[in-house]
Image (cartoon, rainbow, N blue to C red; front, side, top):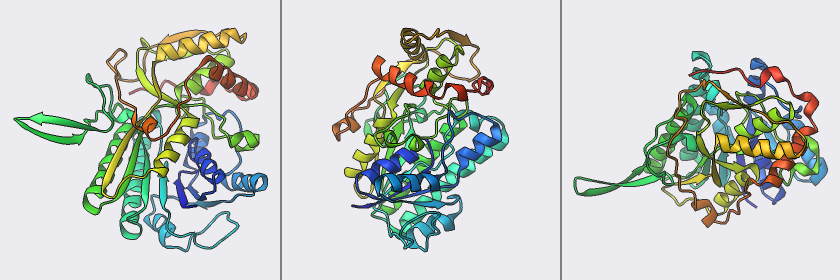
Length: 395
């Protein structure tokens, strides 16, 4: 099977992605610098449970499955570290076979600071976000240009790039007629955070690389992800992904489940009409895998809106409350003054059929699925720290 390189392979999505491909026979290498772990320590925000290091996870995975995931610990803002992944020698933190693996057929790019609140804590964290996200993407683009122009880049974008326009959101592109002429353009972006703004810049960088050097890129505009368990993590609890429930790194539905179990009122910002597209973590793995199996053409920037259904914050809170109460929890909802500058009521109608058309089979947010999340999170109830749930980062 082909060689898959996962950048940001320690993260909430990166590690499950690495196991998903390894379990299907791919040669997998992961790279990470523990940015998220270190940020959680620096900011004193909570993880629901402790997670082995990336090297330890790879060893556990090999012991349980006989399969190898090679591990490189390094900061990809350093162009030399990025370029070594293509031309060797690679400094593996853990690998059974220490030889240079060779040019990857597919690169999955998760290696970015992923939090809107983090990016707006203050100028320091804003700078970290801009420098990290743009340098990693730029280093990747030039390494692929110089060493591997046939390699397929699958980059994780975000639906937050689009904002909440008062028109339907197409899948990445829009045709415009102006003064009797027509053209096709990237759909207008209007991000609501500095983090999302860097993701727009990522798209622009890779679009430049596609136009100039015929790179092949799939950009997945992902909505907020929820869930914990995947097919592979069920093998052993030590293989579960990093799971945050704090305001900085925790996604909204994951936070709500933890809040409900901890008897902490669900933190709905403002009117709660903010509507977004969501997907199960299992569907993230499907989307990436199907994108790998049907790669973008040479000289193509292919964009998919990576969501499976849309909900308002109020709808999510009401679902969690209903399911939580049925399980014996006393789930309360609290409408807080919104710390973010965002529309609390708006039009939102994105198109998101492309991934289904290439074979993704959605997992929908059912009551049974939510109940399963309650049961999993409840195993770690004693680890929940109430003081880290909400800080009220303002912008």
